[in-house]
Amino acid sequence: MEQKSNSFLETEKISVLMQRYAVPCIISLLVAALYNIVDQIFIANADYLGSYGNAANTVVFPLTVVALAIAVMIGDGCCAFVSICLGSNERENAHRSIGNSIVLCLIGSIILTAVYFIFRDQILGMFGGRVNEETFRHSKEYFTYISLGIPFYMFGQAMNPIIRSDGSPMFAMVSTLAGAVVNIILDPVFIFIFRWGMMGAAVATVIGQVLTAVLAVGYLCNMKAVRLKKESFRLNGRLIARFLPLGICSFLSQISLVAAMAAINNMIQKYGAIDAVFGQEQFAQIPMAVVGIVMKFFQIVISISVGMAAGCIPIVGYNIGAGRKDRARSLFTHLLAAEAAVGAAAFLIVELLPKQLIAIFGAANESVYYTEFAVKSFRIYLCMMILACVNKATFIYLQSLGKAFISTMLSMVREVVFGVGFALLLPAFQGLDGVLYSMPAADLLTFFISAAVIRYTYKTLKTTEKVEVVSCRTELSQ
Image (cartoon, rainbow, N blue to C red; front, side, top):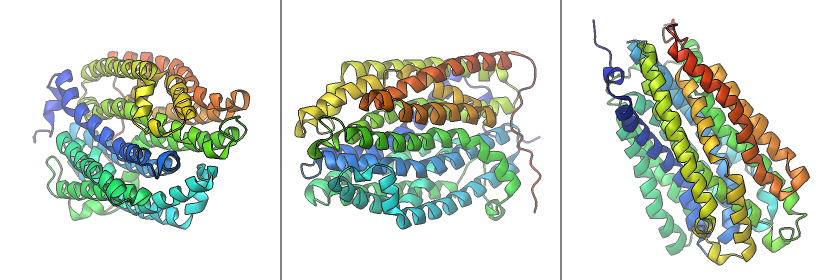
């Protein structure tokens, strides 16, 4: 009988596997997050852009996350499915699912790009771009050029987890890192030397995304555990229905940020207009710029959290497919402890060093109101980071077990019901402060649900009963 690919996932120490798979995944996600964050840092420190450019970046940011959400839904879903297939020695469906995911990603990216160009002004208005005319002008310029890179961005991000599932987490990390390094090098050149403004920041980002996509194509032509064939790219509805739901949790974790940002930006625009300070034209963009910066820091932390959990998907999927629930349970323990530690470190940073954080984003060039609101925003908005990290890990772990429906429903409650709901409700009672309290309130309530789910998951993995996972044995029409 042919030996199963990646069999070391069933024998190597859990701590060693976590380091091998989670660290590259964390770095990959951090690098992806840094694309937009690096743009914002350089924009904030350009005296001819300042908080107007920062606010414009905040407006456009959730629209790039829409592209990321679609990409990770395809990529993470395929990654989980391929890992389970390899654990069960079902290589036929593994290569077909990868080919189908590539086609889906290309089709989705082209459609999204077209939508962005056709409805640009309306979309920007929905995300608070009309807070004042200068912010709207910068938003249009940045969004136009960022949209050109959507197909490359989506392809690179979707292929990243698929490359990890093939047993090459280091290559996945390096390909993403290479694009980010190019972006970091070109940003100051285009913004400060050429003085291309928002266009320069966007063009630097797109060039980096193109490089990552090209490297991904090169890898796909020389995969290790899986070999792509011509028939791999023939779309099959039943196969797509198997792997795509496994990425729904990843999709919701990203798209919910879009919904939350839309709600938050509109609440900022509404309640900022009646604020004694931010109701003034020259200060109107500050709350939007600041909250955008705070959410960028949150994205850095949550990228570490998601990276640890998503990096474990191939390990969990393989061991469940091989019947090793004991190893899956041990990994869950290691994961939750690591997630809590990351959240604790983030909490200490935002509570003790908020002025240092905001200084990175050009606070020296802004009014005192900018710094004061930023300090308050960091301390309130991110005060439940420990719970946020544990919640996210729990949902993604369920995804790696093949429990797509439960994972999706829990994510929906956190991200849409609580996340968006509180963002819309609390400002009615607390004004701008209500926007800041919406995040910790959502994470606190979600944790009560997560605690019950964690207990149930441990009980399930401890029993001798078979864990129900998605089957990778799918009848394919020829």
